[in-house]
Amino acid sequence: MRYTPKEPRENVNIVRTSLLKEFFLLAGGILTITVIVYTALGLAVDLVVPRLSPGIEQRLGGMYSGMYADTGDREAEKRIQRILDGLTSVQPEERGWRYRVHLVENTTVNALALPGGRIVIFSGLLDVVDSENELAFVLAHELGHFAHRDHLRGLGRRLVLLAMVTAVFGQESSASRFIYGSLMDVEMKFSQRQEEAADLWAVDLMNRRYGHVGGAVDFLEAIARKEKRSRFAYFFSTHPHPSRRVKVLKEYIIDKGYRVRESIPLNGL
Image 1 (tube, one colour):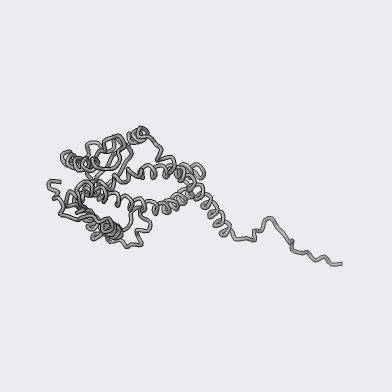
Image 2: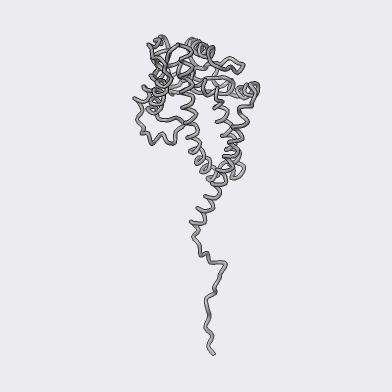
C-alpha cells in the first residue's frame, strides 16, 4: 500500500490573515479607546475648571511669572496696560486680580492669555494695528478667554492627553506621537469655537467701553488681506479663517444694533 502524505489543515506557523490588516485593526482599536477615554477626561476637566478658585489659578500663573518679565518696550507696555485697564473697568465680572500686559519683542502677530490674568502681546502685532480700538479688540478677545476660562480648559486637556498617552506608550514612541497628533487635530475644532465666542465677547466689551464698536473688525480684516493660506488650511487650525471671523462679527454687530464710529488713532506704539 502506497503512502501519500497530505498537507496539514492547520499550521500554527502559517499566518493566513494579513499582518497589515491586523496592524490597522489594532491601531484603530487603540485610537478609538484613547479617543473615548480622552473625551471622558476632557469632560471632567470642563466640569472642574469653572470650580477652580482664583487662588489656584494665581498659583498656576506663577509658572509663567518670569517668562515675559522686562522683555519689551516698558513705555509702550504701560500704554497698552492703560487700554486694558479701561476694558476691565467695565467688564461684567471680575476674578479678584488685576490683569497685566506683557509686551514681548517678537515679530509674531499674536497675543496670548495665560493663567493668573496675564496677557502677552507680541510686538509684531503692533505693526498691524492702526487704532486704539483695534488693539482694544485684541485685548478684549483675550479677556473673553479669561471669562470663559478657555486658557485653563486648554491647559487641562493637553496635560490629560500628554499624561495618558505617555503612560500607555512611553514619551518618545511613534505611537505616542501619532495618537497625540490625531487627537490634537480633533481638539482644534473645539478651539475654533472658543475663538469665535471670545470674538463676540470682545465686541460686547468694546461697546461697553467706547459706546460703539468702531475698529472691532479692522484688525481681522487686515489679517485677512495678508492671509495667503486657503480656507481648507484652517480646518486644522486653532483659529477660524480671518474672513469667517469678520463675517460672523459683522453679522453679530448688525443683530445687536451696535453703532460704528471713528476709531481713536494709536500714536507712538
